[in-house]
Image 1 (cartoon, rainbow, N blue to C red):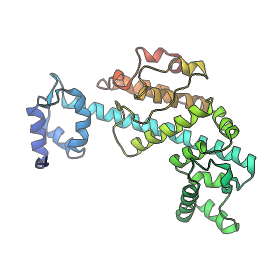
Image 2 (image 1 turned 180 degrees about the vertical axis):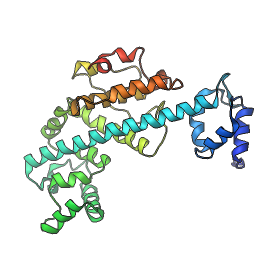
Image 3 (image 1 turned 120 degrees about the horizontal axis):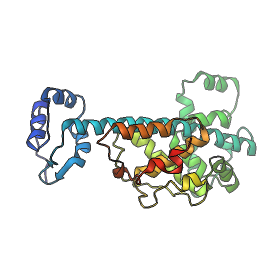
Image 4 (image 1 turned 90 degrees about the vertical axis):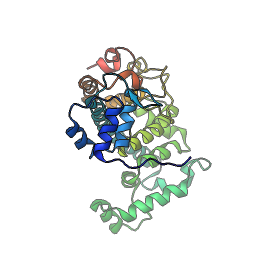
Length: 299
């Protein structure tokens, strides 16, 4: 089958939506938004308002403003999630470098035997480190490289150059289980769950960083959910909806409780769901009355 659809002007896009049953109170305003938000991109949000996906007919009462509200909700949700993941990434880097350095010294990362030779791409890891060292513009790191005659700077410096993807692999790839356990224990996880969570959060971060839809996504890369640990977290998970966003948000909230007990992640999330009526929490795997679960109602 060949693709034969022609490009539409902005005005034609507005009329197409109206012809499919979308209520557009202000056509000029709708055209303005469509000139800044790609029709196809916005379509991933109005898809949930369509009753008949063959004819693309909208559910009765669906307005352009409702679709736009869902789009804004998702954008604000991604920013909230990215903010949390940034703090988690920095904290995990810190713990990884700290425990490795105390195990084998400042250049412990140069010891290939520290990593699992069958499952970890050590050569790829070192190539990534040297690539980042070669293009860094960070003055402190450049001074370290100029001052000392070493293959790389110390592990607590190199860790700052690791992407979240490589950081996840570097934790999971450790050959010594005790090191994984030490890092995971800090965040109140067992090491198997912790590595799975990091792998999952890497994917979530990439979704957010590339501005893709997050709100009602079914994840292909899921994480192992903890069966032991803080009761506040365990009693607030939704084990019946493992592929949806809610459990990811619960895990992020738990991390934030550990990293920054005075955080506002939970308050901001609850506020977001209240001020955006089009964002149905059930579509993200939220259980009924989720705000009353221990993880969310605690102070």
